[in-house]
Structure formats: structure tokens, C-alpha cells
Amino acid sequence: MSTNISKQKREDLLAKIKEIRTFISAAPQDENTGNLLTYLSDLEKDVNGKKYGLVFEEHCEEIDEVLSTHTPVLTEDGSLFIDNGGQMNFLIEGDNLAFLQLLEKTHKGKIDLIYIDPPYNTGNQDFIYDDRYVNSDDLFSHSKWISFMNVRLQVAKKLLKNEGIIFLSIGDIELSDLKLLCDEIFGEKNCLAIVPRLMKTGGNKGRFFSPNIDYVLVYAKNEAEAKDFKGELDEELVKKLYNKIETEGPRKGQRYRPFGLYQSSLDERPNQRYYIECPDGTFAIPPGDTFPKTIADGEKVLPNKGDGCWRWSQERYLIEKENGNILFTPSKSGVLVQPNGTPSKWNVYTKIWLSDRKEEGQTPTNFISKYENRHSAKELKELGVAFDFSKPTGLIQYLFSLTGAGKQAVCLDFFAGSGTTGHAVMNLNAEDGGNRRFILCTNNENNICREVTYERIKRVIDKEAYAASLKYFKVDYIPVSERMYYEYADELLAHIRELVELENGINFTGNAEVGIVLTEDELTEFIQNGEAFAKCRKLYMGHDVLPSDEQECALKKGGIEIGIIPDYYYRDLQEN
Image 1 (cartoon, rainbow, N blue to C red):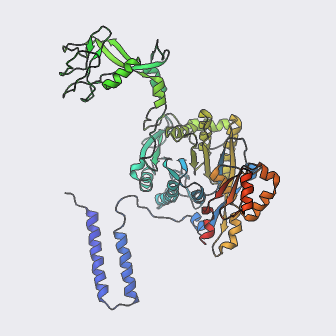
Image 2: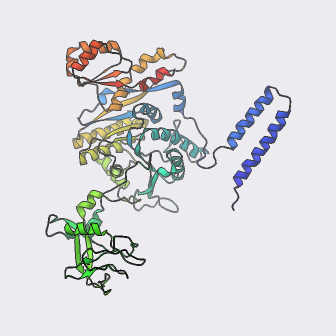
Image 3: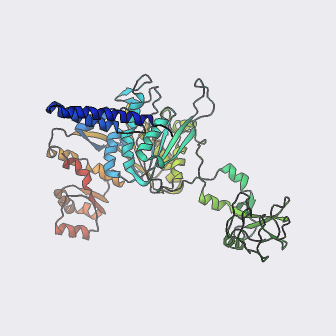
């Protein structure tokens, strides 16, 4: 039996702490001895703490200091609004941790898909912490990166639906740390795959191996509720295997591949050993020593050990035979046998139809070779957008299409960079007529949000004439420390509109069909405005606005649907 050395060390420490406690307890008691006993209890908790998993030094970021004295809000830059019909999407400029706190109010348990491509922390000026690049000489480089990711992924988990999926691109330096962190946050059983991706072919960088791959970590919020992943069939495989064309019947002209109804690798299975009548009137059965008593098509027998079986049950065979899905070819090797045990002159195949297989899809392999970085460089060059190290649009389209999340999915990327995720979502919608929405967030370091992310989305919409709209929000902050709630309540209420738009994917500006009232005075003014009242189809109303009986009748008569703004928008007011 192996010895748990760490456990022994813990038990030795606990024994020493116990001895010290006994000694202190026996001494005259005063404030100092009481404090010492409290310290010992704290030490015991630490010794009995975490035994396995990722251990790292927690670090406080500059944004943590800001959020401890301020509450984040969203402010729209109306000059950047893109109104081109279709779904309303959102681009947020600002610190993603602050924005994730806001998103927890509007989208907790509502996000279908998350893709992030966080900084890789290679030590080559790619990871900024507190406005400084973290270099390879920083003794806490990995801890800072993990601490940075930890707080953001904790919120990301809350945002996902129970069946939601998160994809995380990462390089090899932080791969192991990120895997351990995600195992703790999402649960090891919810890790669906670690997928290597070919970034490029060739290259001569590095001393020992040229770094040509990175990785995509794939986690489910709840593996049991996630849908099976299905991708498109490989085109080369289709050309090679589905090379037969039906010449008659209802499937005339369709492509199929023959596949043997008998497979020697199958174990003995009840109801799957029976005779099949061949074109010349003879009968064939898989090899074995047990035969049906009656020689007739479909007559079955319970197989014994060592007896061969067909892939299909007797019942299914009879149905597929009626449907014309059985194929006979002359046999050269005589694998099947006749009722007397001699080799049959025939092989029996089933027809696997290409159209059926396309509908079923194919389980994707855990290696991605199709979407290299050169594809993204070409995309951005064609759009006239300058940005390095963007992921290819096709990669994110591919990942999202595997999940079965549906055409109404809400997709989030809080390390948006050049906006590849938004581009990919619009492409998917154009391909299948979907109504997916995207929410992107990035800081504005070197004007990336305004000059790269926004500009890319705008140019894609213009170039492709996509029916897609975009709102541009900025994260702002309201000071709340040392202030009573009534001192900043009006400041917060002034930003409720943006949260309602974000949660519901709508636009209030210049849109007569939707309205918003946050006070009873605003409700009175809205009802008295005949033109606005007549055009409005849905009114979002503050949770504490109480219409009079007369106002309720007017709203009902006007056919206006009421949406109550949830009270959790106001919790900043209630908690201070």
C-alpha cells in the first residue's frame, strides 16, 4: 500500500498545533491567549484546506480597486449605432470584468455559447496586468495570469445556460494551468475536449520544435444537458466512399455507399442471426455452427458463442429490404455460408445514403487542421483592417456550428480583439437564415475597440449587406463609496435603458414601437402623448411603477404589451 506523505505531514502539523493549544489553554487566560487560540484555529483551517488542484497566489487588479468604490454602468455612443435591420448586437468598450458584472444582471443563465481568445502570457508583451506588460522575468507571471482569468471565468460560468458551451483558445505555456482552473470552475467531468489546432504549416522558429499549434479547450456548463456535437462530412471522404448512384426507385439519382451487413467484429446478439435469400434463390448466413431449423428468408435462430451475426435485427432487415436498401454482390472469398455450411456465392451489403449521413452529421475529430492563421490575415486585409494574431472566422463558425445551439443562440466574447466572433456569427446567420445575436467586449487599448473591432463589424455589414444592427456601449463608473443610495440613485436610473436594450436585444432610439418608463410621472407623460402611445407596441416599465386603474385600462385598450424591468437592475440601490 502506498504512503500518503503529504497527509502524514499535515497530521504532524495538526498534532503540534494541538500541543500548543493545550499549553496555551493551561496558561492564565487573557486577551493575548485568546488571540493566540484564534490564530491556531486559522492555522488548522489552512492545514486542512485544499489538497489537490491548482494553487496560485491571488492578486488584486486595478479594476478591483475601482469596483470596490464604484459601480459600473453602460453609456451608449449613439454616433456609432448601426441600424441595418436583423438582430440587434452589442459591442462594449471597457474592462471586461466590470462589464461581466453588468452582464450577470442581464444574462445570468442566458448565454448559449462563449468563445474567448485571452492573452497567452508568453512573456513577449502579450499580457497586460494593471497597465503593465507581464514579462517572463516576473516571478508571479503565472499566478497573475491565473488570478486574472479566474475571476472572469467564475462569472462566465454563471452566464451560461445549463446546456451552454464555452470554447477557450490558448497556447501551450498556460494550457496546463488553464485546464486545471477550468476543471475547478466548470468541473473536470464537463471538459469535453482539448483540441489542438494547426496555426500554420512550416516555419523555423524555436530551438527544438517550431510552434505550429495552439489549443481549444471545450467545456460544458453541464455535460449531461449538452447536445452531441455533429459536424459536416469530410468532402474528400464523401467523394471516396459515396461513389454509387441509385438507378431506380424513389431514391433514384441519390449517392450511397455499400457497407457489409455482416461484420466479423460483432459479438453474438439475439435476433441478429437469420437467413437472407440471395438473388439466385440460395440462402446466406454469417459463419457459425448454429442454423435456423427452417430455411426461409428472415428465419432466425438464437446464436451461440462463436456464431456470426448481422449488423441489423431481423425486424429491421425486413423493413429495409422492402425499402430497397439491401444490395447483393458476387463473393470471391465466400465469407458468408449456406445452410449446409458451405461458402455462399454472395455478399450482402446495406446502402448508406449520403443524404441521410449529411443530416445526421459526423462526430468531429479532436484535431483542427483546416483553419490556419493565414486565413484570418487574408480576411482582415480584404477588409482593410490592421490587426495581428486574429483567429480565423471559419474556426469560430466551425466550433459554434458543432454544438446544435440553434439559430436563436446568444453568443458572447469578452476578449473580442478584432471582432472575429461577431463576424463569424453574422456569417452563420447568412448561411442558414439564423437569428443569432452576439455580445462583444474589449478594452480600448491603442483604440482597438473603436478602430479595429467596431470598424471590422461595420465593414463586414456593409460589404456583405448583412441584416444586422449594432449598438456601441462604453463602460462607465459611478462613485458609490461614502454616499447614501439616494445620492446616486438618479445617476444609476439614467443608465437602466442600456441594460434593458442589452438584455432584450432591442433599440429604443428612434423606435416608436418600444418605449420605456421608469417613474410614474414618465408613465403619465407617455399615456398623454397621443402619437407615441398610438405607435407603441411594447412598453418596458420600472418594477416599482404602479399604474392607476385608468392607466391600466388605457394600456390594455391600446394593445400595448407590458414588460416589467426586473428589480435586480436596482440592487445597487438596495444594497447600499
